Image 1 (tube, rainbow, N blue to C red):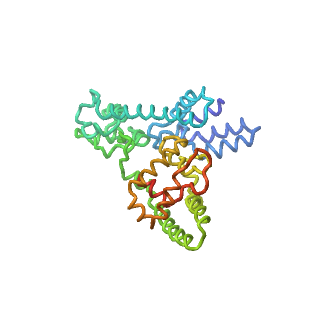
Image 2 (spheres, rainbow, N blue to C red):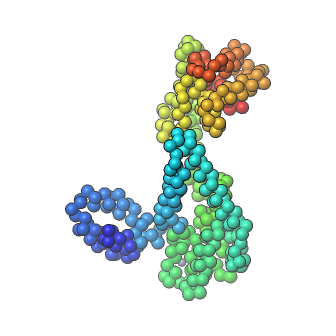
Image 3 (cartoon, rainbow, N blue to C red):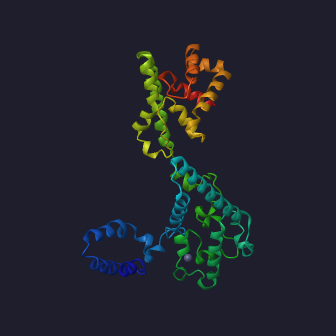
Length: 348
Ligand SMILES: [Zn+2]
């Protein structure tokens, strides 16, 4: 433990190898452990926890896993008495996240509207209301160093710029009596709301335009396939085929692992409507409400849907498929058919 501590606390790059070797010697009876520590932690991630490197990379203040641990702890507390089912747990987790979300929002509001006394100087003029209070405090501490550091880069060390993306003393000195420009602050500190502010940094990294193009192309191809299927195959096969189009599309594109909100509903012939009810947050057992609302939608816009489906027959068939006499298993004629019913769902 002591040797490990000396590795983590090592604050001189040159001394690091020696300390690692000492660790190797102490742990030599356990070669598998040594390999694991080396290959999984020390080689790839040393700059995240070894002192000598921590101040050289941008970590924006996150040098421990505290935040994750705290979230884990509060989650455990929320769930400790629950012998309930998944829905109950889901509900508890959801409530906890809403509370945390509100707490963060409140802190954003504070950053936007509450101005500390010492920030009422012109130096901060361009930052107030745009930068979090926490960051302003760090800048304020750094401003105190300007007198002793001046423009001297070697005396400054520039660790605030390097680790937090905030102007360090020597930079602050160069801004002089004017104000600190917003450009000198990392975009992370300027995020004071949950709305999607498109920044140059995030928009280029998070674009999924390409993926959407692929999906759109696949959908076009499928449209053709559905028409061909209609012409070539008997009605029963067609129904089965349509039920499976979306699932096969998803799995053929390999997107399944990336879909986060997967709901595995009961398979009783109402599954399509169960999914809609579940995703609307009503709980899957509300499938009958979904059927009823869709029936209303179809009746209200009869003309339009007859035209969309290409005739009265199809319209009546779809309308009938929504009607069920009892709450138990529904036959194939009551299943949700995509894409026709999909249009109704999307419109509603
Ligand atoms: Zn500096």
